[in-house]
Length: 161
Length: 425
Ligand code: SF4
Image (cartoon, rainbow over all chains, first blue to last red; front, side):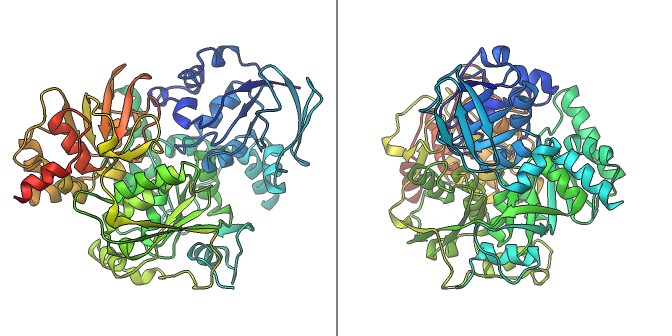
């Protein structure tokens, strides 16, 4: 089960992975994730937590560190009303689940959720509410199931040889 | 029913006669472009793990532009790694500190109409100005392309944006884009394809068209297309390449568009975006005359030759106000050379502009020219997210090169038209 963090609309890649720390190691970058809007996020987020956002999560740069820092911090999924298109691809490539759903009004920070990407169902275990998400296309589920694009390609290359 | 330009290019790359919006297809990639930040340092470990080299060393272009020139040991190491990887992979096209990737790629003749191109950078839609389907991906996605020569795509719907009327003097493609950001919002493109059409677009130069396609990224579109015409093929020939190697495609008259937005360029004055989003745009005369600490003419969006000429038109014979500073980083070394040859650079430096190396530099907050806490900047760049150009509390305004130059003269957010009118007298 996953504990919820909420962060509103238009969370851009500069907020997720601030340019000033892009040269350094990913752990340092992760420590500054979202600090411009929430100084405590990187310190207090726990493995398995989920982010619930509004429109345009991950807009901006193609830097996949924006998704990678979330994976580093243990975030399991991002649920948003809409995503920046590049971020959406990056998330799956790195094994981070991205669900398109209008969940903001149905969940509060700290609530616990259960997610079923294939059917597109989110269950709020704290209130019992069910929220409909867009089902995740099969080829993306295959990539996430493999743990990301690289392990997925590894499997494909092995099959070929 | 006919196909849109986007559908035609994607169908070709997918090896199919037709594709339809919404369908997921696998495409052969004609060209992959990567830079020093998202490129070798991120894809090398993946290729090593998989034990393979790039699928085709003639179809990969590497451009070092983000961390150039090196300002510390970390950036120097990134640039060194990039050079070594290029050698190791026997990449034929490598541009080391020659300028910003989105400008260098067409400048050196790599883009031809009809190509399906993947770029490791979010402003990759710039390539759409050449009638290519070009879009940006992250590093792992790119590693997948480099290994297989293929990538998947969900065939986009096309949002047509039709511009008619000719731009008044003092307005530019940048103002058209800020207007679109304000009107359609940063998700107006909904990760679909935007296609710009109409008489205004047909009349724009290639560099102005590049600004249009570039900022399709700010509309949240996957691609920002402009069908190729004589202006396109002339540019490609001048870049020393053969446009015949590509295929000039056009959308069918009966193709299905999600929506057609119509705009009138003849009524468009200079626009500025207030911090922290390009969507916070409006006419410059309605903006607060905020004091500006730094003016920046740079980036793939706003430092091509034509952009520098716009700035020179305002700055020629004037001085940068003592309360501010003007940094200019031409988009490429070729732009610098051309601006030196035609006298543009002299006008800028005589006005007191500080000339910087070509590269991303301050635009991404990676290099020289970043902002201190609390500082404000007026920039010709594409995006002004919170803290993008430096310290967390710094603020960025966006404007055309005309507007940035006028702001440099007054030290406050300023309308360039009075200066241009004075010149005309
Ligand atoms: S100049 Fe700015 S917007 Fe353009 S590629 Fe570089 S960092 Fe990105």
